[in-house]
Image (cartoon, rainbow, N blue to C red):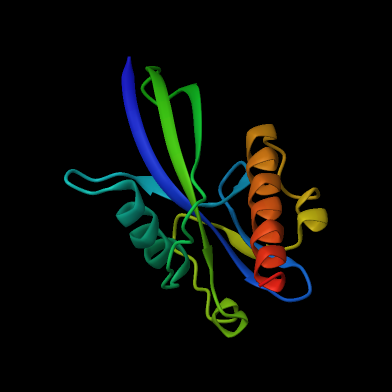
Length: 146
């Protein structure tokens, strides 16, 4: 069995509600993510992949780290054990207008949690986005209380 390790970021900008960047892969909508290169930390991978896949520079928000694990069969018919780590990153609203996707993707959108239901079909990605949403809401509420 092959092991693959990836890292990525859930990128958002804040208006009245968080607007999340989702990317159209060939068969699904998801988040910025890529393989962790040798001698690279998951955080560095997430930052690099944001630049490569969406053309944006990000700074990760402390305290949010979510992991996913799953299996799939690759093109060579080999079973792959996949592990992905996701972080959270806020960008300015003006940066959202500068997103330029890589050749790996067909399209992109910024969506609210509610709007994401039309696009994100993978259950674990839906759950991941909800966790990010509630984390953001908690942080924003805490800042208002100081």
